[in-house]
Length: 513
Image 1 (cartoon, helix red, strand yellow):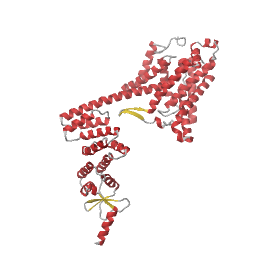
Image 2 (cartoon, helix red, strand yellow):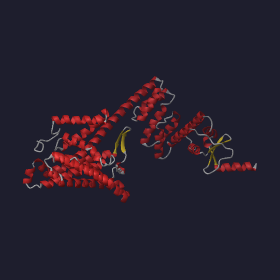
Image 3 (cartoon, one colour):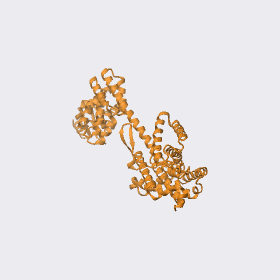
Image 4 (cartoon, rainbow, N blue to C red):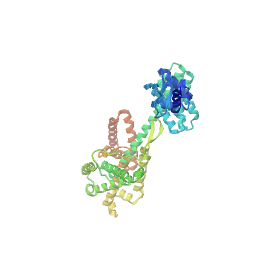
C-alpha cells in the first residue's frame, strides 16, 4: 500500500496529465484507430484549449505514454512510467498534428508566429478547423493577416456540407488574385454537385484568372522596361563613342566588364575591412567603376584610336583586338570563372503588388539609375563647356580647331566619358547577375542595335530605341522564344535601316548628312 502511494506521488510530481483536454479526448488522440484519432484531434482543435499545443508537442517529442487507458505526459529528462506504452505516430497523424499546431498558432500574440501559421495553412483550408479560423479572424488586428485569414476562412467554407456556405465562399474568393486560391477552387469544382455552388465557383475561377492575366501582362511589361533600362545604360556610352564620335568600339562591352569588376573589388574591400558598412559599398563602387572604365577608355584613345579616326574598318579591327586583350587580362587577374557580386540589403527582395507581379528592388534601382545617368548626360552635353566642345568637334572638326578648340583633348575626354558611362552600366549589371570575363559580349550587339535604331548622334532616339527594344524583345520571347525573338529583332532592324539609314530619330546636321 505504501509502495503504491509513493509511486502515485512520484507520478504526480513528474507526470503532467492532460486534464484540461479531458482524459478521454487526450487518450483518443494518442491511441486508437486512425480516423478516430484524427476526429478527436479536430474536436480538440475546434475547442482551442490552451493546453492542447503543449500536449501535441510532447506527443511529437515522444514524451506521451499510455497507461491504464490514459495519456500521460512525462516531463523532459524523466523516465517513462512503469508498464507504459508509447503511442504510434504514422505519417498521416504527424501531418495532422503539424496542421493542428499551425492552426493553434493563429491565436498566438506574436505576429510572426501567426504569419508562419498562415503560410503553413494556406493549402490546408479544412472545414473541421473553420471554428478556429473564425475565432482567429475575430481576434486578428493586422490588416494584411486579416486578408489572408479571410481567404482561409472562405477556403474552409468551400469544404462545408452546406451548399449555401460553399456558394458564399466562392463569391468571396472571386475577389482574390492568388494562384493557390484559383487552384483550390478548381479542385473543389471537380467534385461539386450543387448547380448554384458550381456556377459560383466557375465565376470565381474566371474572375481570378482574368486578374492573374493582368498581373502577368504587368510583369511582362515591367520585364521589358527593365531590360530596356539595361540596354539604355549600356548604349548611353556607345551613343557618345559611336553616335557622336563615329568610332566603332568593339571593346565597349569589355568596358562594361571593367566597371563590373571594379564593383567586385570594392565589394571585397568592404567585406574584408568594413564589414559593418557592407550595405553602403555601392556608393563607393559607382565612382570607382566610372573612373576605372574611363581611365581604360582614355588609354585606348590615346594609344590606338586617335590614329584611326575616319577609318571605320581599321577602328573595328583594332578595338576587337583590344577587347580580346582586356578579357584575357581579367582572366589572368580574377580567373576564368564568374564572380558573385552581392546586393546590398536595401536592394534585396521586391515589392509584391500581386501574387504573380513583383517589382524587384534591384531592377527598380536600375530603372531610376538609368534615368539619372540619362539626365546627367543630357545636361552635360547641352549645358557645359565640355558638351559644347564635343558637339562642335562632332559637327565640324576643322572649324572647331580654327576657333581654338583642342580637338585631340576633346576626343580623349569624350571617349573617356563614354567609357566611364559604360563602367557605370557594368556596376548596375553586377547587381542583377554574375560577373565574368564574357559579360560584355552579351550586350555589345544589342547596344549597337539601340544606337543605330535610335539614330546616330541622338540621345532621345537612344532612349526610345532602348526601352522599345526591351519591351518588344520580352513580348516576342513570350510568343516565340528567345532565339526566334532575337532573329525577329535583327530582321526588324535591317528593314528599318533600309527605309531610314540614319535611324528612326536622327537629327539633320553635318554629322549625319
